Amino acid sequence: MKLSPDETVFWQHGFIRINLTLVTTWAVLILMVVGARLITRKLKTDIHISRWQCILEIVVLGIATQIKEIGLDKPEKFIGFIGTLFLFIAVSNLCIIFPGYIPPTSSLSTTVALAICVFVAVPFFGILESGIMGYLKSYLQPTVIMLPFNIISEISRTIALAVRLFGNIMSGGMIVAILLSIMPFVFPVLMTILGLITGIIQAYIFSILATVYIAAATHESKSSTETE
Image 1 (cartoon, one colour):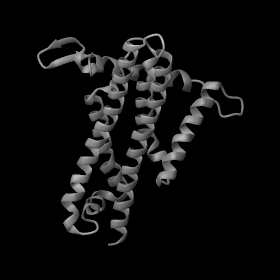
Image 2: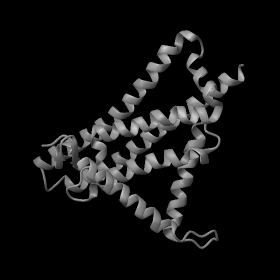
Image 3: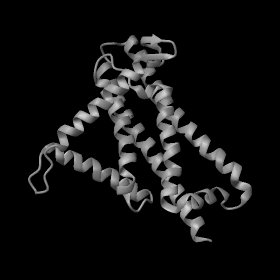
C-alpha cells in the first residue's frame, strides 16, 4: 500500500519528475478553471438567476461572512486568496468519488506548498495594511525580547499547517484502504461519504487558520503603527 501519491511516478528525467501528485493537482486546477468559466459566463444581476449562480453566490457569501466574523472588516480584500485555498482543498478532497483518484492533499509536498502560500500571504497582507515598517514592528510586540519567539511562531505554525492537513488526509486514506481490504462489500459507500465530509472539514479548518493568521498580522501591525 502506497502512503503518498508521490510514490507513483509516470516519467522522470534527472531531477525532473512527473508523479501522481503533480497530475492530480493539475487535473483539479483545470477542473476548477473550466468550472469557474462555465458558471460565470452567464452571470445575471436580476432576480432570475441560474441554479449554478445561486450556488456560487451562497459559497462566496458564506466565505465572506466567515472572513468578516474572524475579524477582517473588508473581506473582499482577502476572499480571492482565502476562497481559492478553501476551494482547491475542498475540490481536491471531494474528487475521491472518482475511482483510482488519490487527493494531492495526501502528499506532504502539496500541503507544504499550501502552507508556504499562507506564510507569504501573512506578511503580504500585513504590509499592505500598515506598510513594511509597521508590519516589522509588530514582531517587537510587546517587547523587543519577543522578536525571536515571534519569528519561531511564524515558522512553527507554517509547519503545523502543512503537517496537520497532510496527516489528516493521508491517515484517512489509509483507514479507508484498510477497511476496504477487510470488508470490501460493506464499507465503500459509507467510507466514501465519511471521506467527503472529512475533506470539507479539513478545507474549512485550513482556510480558517489562514484567515486567523492574516487577521492577527493585520491587527498587530495596525496596533503597532497606532502606538507610535
